[in-house]
Image 1 (cartoon, rainbow, N blue to C red):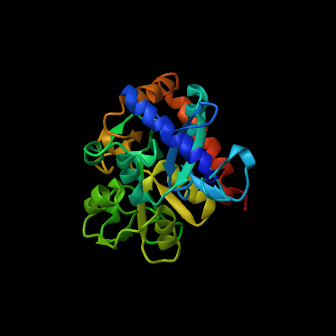
Image 2 (cartoon, helix red, strand yellow; image 1 turned 60 degrees about the vertical axis):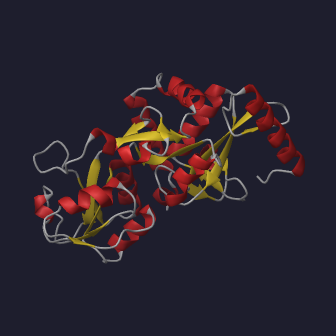
Image 3 (cartoon, rainbow, N blue to C red; image 1 turned 180 degrees about the vertical axis):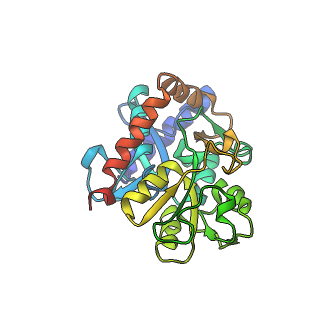
Length: 283
């Protein structure tokens, strides 16, 4: 929701007071002194996050919009906010605006399926992982590469993926003689490129791939992980974290306190639930 003039005045006063005390934890404070955690995400990256027209399944209204956001990231944001006693505000931003929003203090954190890469760690701080996502390949059921069992088997394929991701920057160049198309601006655009026949394959992570196969029944998911023919990736490539402003140890530690009580099994159950209720899974 859009904040009233009074809200803005209260927010300025609260931030000024916190600066005087030398502690800045979260972005804004409401009239009843309850903190509001401002969380940024794309709201267009199922099953991590998406936009829907109502609050079904517990979706949260997007700031400044009549639409709502839901998905794994919203589920996680709600849990963190509830555990810490904060109100929650979801801010919709495009992918390339997420890191700058944290750096500038526009939002408190980003929960948006971000890999914890060394490059990003130079710009923001990360919590412990809140998901571990293996790398997979999507092709068409009737395509030339439907029987590929390794990265080598994708040789000569026309491929693409989402911009500014390890999928595009690190994985695609590992495919021998690949015709690498320009990066797509979003995960949905990447999937449309495959569906429309502009490419033979796209590389993404397991949750995105599972969700895509629900939305596009003619897709086939190829998982080379655990074999000699897998993509070469590091832990940082598959560890998904929550980013906060550099030096905001107070918020980072608070979020880590919530995550430490969760297991990988908890994460997988939440992700499976998100996939089951994504809008296209019910069409």
